[in-house]
Amino acid sequence: MTRTPTIVDSLPKAETHLHLEGSIRPETAVELAARHEVEITPEAVAGRYAYSNFAGFNEAFKWVTSFLRDPDDYRLVMQRLADELIRQNVVYAEITISVGVMLRRMQNVEANFQAIVETATSVPFRRLRTAFIFDAARQFGADAAMEVARWAAKLQKSGVIAFGMGGDELAFPAANFRPAFDYARSEGLRIVCHAGEIGGPEAVRDAIEILGAERIGHGIAVMRDSALAESFANRKVVLENCLTSNLCTGALARQTGKTDATLADHPLRKFLDRGLVVTLSTDDPAMFGTDLLTEYSKAASLGLSKDQLLGLAEHSFSAAFLPPLDKRKYLDDFRAASKSAH
Ligand SMILES: [Zn+2]
Image (cartoon, rainbow, N blue to C red):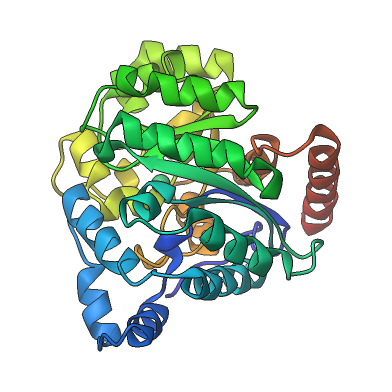
């Protein structure tokens, strides 16, 4: 992976839209498969990780997660992800776990999560702090989403901070999931939702107005509705942009109506120019062959000013679901480091 370094490289960073299962690199997938007596090669994994649309990506996600079968598997992938985050000087990460998929496979959510948390907290806190988002898969329906919300509430004391929903955005309307989101909020969980990735601007509006999302996963459909963009800028709605992801899943091609959409078509810079609050993340870094440093390089290549680039990195801390005093500390550290990097 060749990339141009940016001012953000050496700074302490936060990442808030990152799927644990999407961080499984080909070598780790080979290792996991071998544990379950399935023989695959890194090349075969790379083949599976090549797709041109969202359905293809979902298939690959289903395939690679089929090798996550017990707590030790989750321990391994969490350890690899922690190493990767520390390498990039990510000091705080909110990691999404597809509990909807775990439940579908009738796994022990509590045991898996305990293994994940034990591994994550074995890393010194000052080097990497983690929190977790339990994610329902939209295509599994409202009852399954409610079950995920219940597990999120139950394991809140062990490190779950938010409830969210991903998967096939076109599967069911937002209104079906309102009870699950209302329940999660009433239990004190924060709320996130993937919307406007392959769905239209109305999906983003619904995620906020019906489900009460505090941050929107992707939200690139907002580029198609300037009234919505303006209202989001005024209300400081947070859009979690993931550049490489939107190219690999065909989401950008779909939103722009251009089958040959490239990075230059991504709305990130326009969003920032219009005053929208945007964060930058990798989404499923291994499945898209990227990492956070690369995402910042790609953002810089869109012509962002140095201040815009730094603002993007700072938003990841200000939009994080951290307790206020801790957030202040991270923001102070980030600002001090960026001043000396100037
Ligand atoms: Zn995502």
